[in-house]
Length: 254
Image (cartoon, rainbow, N blue to C red; front, side, top):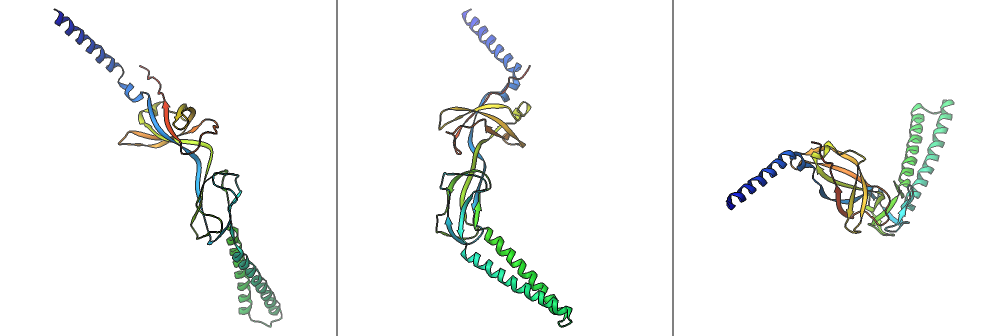
């Protein structure tokens, strides 16, 4: 009798467990999950040299802050300045020649070919001045957005080549998170929803909100990429820190 009672109890427990699993089949895709994520700056880029020249000055040191439009790199462009002066002198001569040819043409003292060549020479000189001015404008590199210097790749008085990386810069006014979530979350996940992220380096939790939802689901992992932003300013947070995203999906309605 004792064995029969134990068997009946075991059968009843299994039946209850089976009924519970049948009543909540969708819950598997909505369980609380911990997802790893890394803090990223909203904007970041590498500034490179557009001309071959010697670095004259780096006004902002590594780790320093700057404003949009502030000069971050200045080159020694004495050669470029001399070439601009030469181009302007050639323009003056071309304009004088063109003007003289037009005067002689009024007096029928010069052929049309000479007049056309003089005009073309003036136009060529104008274009050369413009090209040298554009080249001289590349002697200073200004910040495209406000932010901080992440890394200096060159030093003052160093000669650089066109295309050589100079500075890594980033805008850390807003720190973002990018991570993958189960595609089943798309039935309730919306832009603007809030959650928390626990940062390993500080051991603290910070508020965040979803900002973008990816447009494609990975067919293998059944996940989708989302982007979020830290909601507020926290001086202790810097780009590169990582932590765990704490998201609690809502309980699905029966």
